[in-house]
Every structure is written in C-alpha cells, then in structure tokens.
Length: 587
Ligand code: DON
Image (cartoon, rainbow, N blue to C red; front, side, top):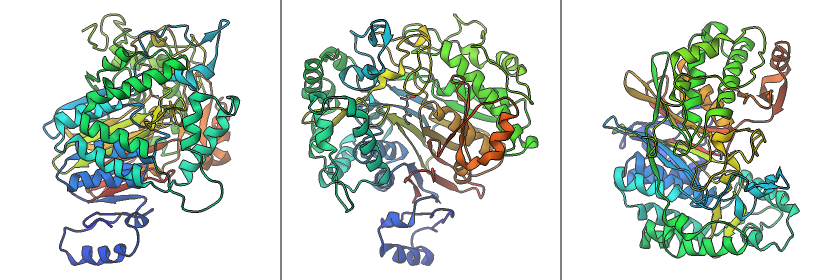
C-alpha cells in the first residue's frame, strides 16, 4: 500500500484521518498485508487529492504524482500516460483527448487534443461504388487521424503542472517494460478485437503488429503483458521532447508505415498538429453552473441542452427512477441528439450555433415534450442566429474518462480515446503505438450511421485537417462558484447521457458521486428511435416505457463514468463506476 493513501471499498467509503493518527496507522498496517488496491475498488474520501480512473494502476500513478509534489494537473497527466500502457485498448498516444479544467484561480480551460483528418482526406474517402464501406473508417490505416493526446497533455503539464512531463512518462514506461497482468476486461477486449479482425487475411501486414503484441496465451495464469517498444517510445519522448514525436522519428515511422499500406497521412500532418484552446461551454441547471467541452465535442452543448430542457420539469416530484422521470429525460435526449445530427461539427470548419443553448430555444424544444407519450421528433430545431452567433474558432473568430482534484482547488476532467477497442488495430511497428480510428466519428455520408449508430450531416463530413465530431463530455459542476463535481464517461454517444444522469442524481436527488454512479442508466440518441435500458431496470420499466410508445432495447451495462465530487458529508469522494474494474482513491 502507498503510505498515506486513503481508500473506500465497494459499497462503503472510508476516510482516513490525517497522517500520524492511530486509526490511520492501524488501517495502514492491515492493508500493508495485501496489495493496496485489493482494499479499494469503489470510492474514497479524503482531503488532499482525489483521482478516479478505470484502472487501479492509473489511479495510483495519479495519486503518486500528487505525493511527489504535483497537483491535480500532474495527476491527470500521470494517469493518462499510465492508461496508455495498462488500458491501451481505450486510449493512448496514438489517440486523442479533451481536457477540461477548473483551476484554483477560477480559470476554466478546455484543451482540445482531438485527432485531425490528414490534409489529403476528402468527403468521399469511405465511399466505394457510391456506398459507405464502414470497414475503411474503422480498421486499417485509413481509419486513423493524426493523434492529439500527447500534444494536449504536454500543453497541460507545461503550463499548469508542477512535475516535468518526463516524470509521468518514465513512471508509465517502467510499467510498460516490466509488464502488468491484464484484467478480465482487458482480456475480453483483446479476444473480441481478434474476432472482429477475422475478415482480414491472417497475414495482413497492417494488423501484424496488433496480432503479435496481443497474442495472449489461452488458459489461466498470471501472464504479464510487456510492451518494451511502447516503453522505448515513452522514453524517447521523455528525452527528445514532444517535438520528437510530432516532427521526428516517430512521425516518420508512422507515416512511412501507413503510406506503404495505402494511408493518407504525411509528415506535415504530424508536424502541423496543434492542440486547440477553446472556450468552455457554460450553462446553468437549477442554480448550478455546468462547464462543459465545446465543439468539436458535442458533449458540452448537449449535456447543457438536455439539462436546460429538464430544468422546467420537476424531476424530484416525479420521483427518482420513476417511469415519468425516465420518459421525460428520454424525450429531452432525443431532441438534443436530433440537433446533434444536423448542427454539430468542427467549429474550425462549420458554424455551430450557440443558439442551441439559448433559453428561449430550449423552451420551444421542451414545449413539445408530452409527459404521457413518446413524441416523434422529426429532426433538428432552428436555433436563433444560427449563422452568426456561432462557437468561436480561430477561423471565425471504446474511450476512458478520468477525474482528478487537489486540495488547492484544481479540478480536472479528461476523456481520452483511440475510439473503438484498439482503434484502427494498426500498431506502428517497433513503437507500440496504437493508431486511433477516430475517422469513423465523421459522417462518412449524410444519414449513414457510424459504428455507434450515430448519423450526421454536412457539418460533420470528412475534410482535410478537420476534427471529427465527438460525444466526449468532460464536465465540471459548480455551486455558488465552487466546484462540487467533476465527471465524464466512456461509451460513445451514451457519454452524454451518462454525464446528464450523474448530474441529475447529484443535483436533483442529492446523491454523492459514488451513489450517483451506482444509479441505473438509460440512453436515447434520436436515431435509432429506441430507449437503451440497462437490464437492472427489469421488465416493469420496459413495460412502462412501451406503454408510452417507446421501443426498448436491453443492454447488460451502459458505459463507464468516473467522478470526483463533494459527498453528502461534505468530504471529497472519488468514485469509479462499479460497472468496471476501476478505482477511486484519495490520500
Ligand atoms: O469521441 C467520441 O465520441 C468517440 N470516439 C468515443 C468512443 C467511445 O467512447 C468508445 N467507448 N466505448
């Protein structure tokens, strides 16, 4: 166990008193007898810092960064880089991220590390004989955008952190080198991805590295996954700086390899990559300020829209988890996702109206909600001043979320992804770098669903240098000007719904973050026109929704949310979704 770390097991929350107190020593002595994470997989409360991620090793890296003198920014960077090693099917240096932070001095930051389409990409890139070939945007070299995660993390660390980036890189490189024992979830993703690639010839060179690195032995045993090439990549960035990644040998290797197999990326795409600094989206909900991520994420806009539509309804009077509540939230989700399909795209390329969040517009959208019946939402609404009052940009004036907070008052939320499991399944030989398949988040053709069943329009068409629309929704909630919750999720479009549900459970129903994450989930994304329900709701909820005219689809479990926030007792709680093998910890 790490001395001084504080933990809460599943279903309970333990707050360890300050160092030196006898209770802490006693608990510490007991926990020393077992691996420190064995005692912790739910959430914990404590005053100096808090981190929640989907993997204990990453949470530990975050906490250790703070113990080494870093702040929540350093914890975020350390956790992100560790996740790239122990959770590489979800995120890594070959992918992208959005970082939303509310700093101790009151500033709010939105750092956009989203991938960009190569300059040579064109709108018909994924059409063959006039039809979209989804395999091209999902697997192989054409699926990858230019990675942005490292550039965004470096910007964050350099400007707002205390530890050198090299500290976190080396910490993660050591684990990559020594190896780790992949958990059930990881092994499941490896197996599923191998099966998914069954269509590709077994010797297809672009997938050869994937198959080599992730050839897991069958059967039981504590097999360790070692990634020496990834360790070397991390160390080369630590010594050569971020420019060695974007302008040096890494970029060259990635470009050489992908272009040999028909890819479009050129070295200029890599050397020209810059993280974008954007203005966070600020909305309000029942006296709380909601700070969300702006386009090219759709998260901030639609979390704000859904809450904005719900604000005029009394969810508490309806009752938590009542059919009445679920129905109206579903109706608000539908309307928001219909707007997403038409209006949202990269603000550096298209005009995304701010009016989507105007009170009058949301009043008008919400007016169509019938408390007793599912309504047929035909499409997007007409927000005011749609071509003028747009999100600012420089031109026109399978994912992971983690949250970290420190006692100084820095609250950081980061959602990072290579998109679906192991991204494009292309690993640049000799580097351990998994290239993303974020190009599938573009609308390959109007109205044609992507991997997540999302449809889009012209606003999200493929274009060179453009960033594909995302649903990632790192969010900070403030009450009386002070942060009370930092939250986000993984799970494609359900990310938006998960963020909304977590916020409702905290704001409307008074739960702390840990309880909020336990709550049953549902989702509606307009198309397909169906409510997705977690099986734990049982048949009565499904019946209640069907009787209101909804189609229902079951899933075993929906998404993975990670949050840090002020618990009901007023202490800081780090909450990892009980649906995954993550860890929330404080120290
Ligand atoms: O940016 C997005 O919205 C997607 N690329 C996120 C993918 C994701 O959450 C995969 N996880 N299940």
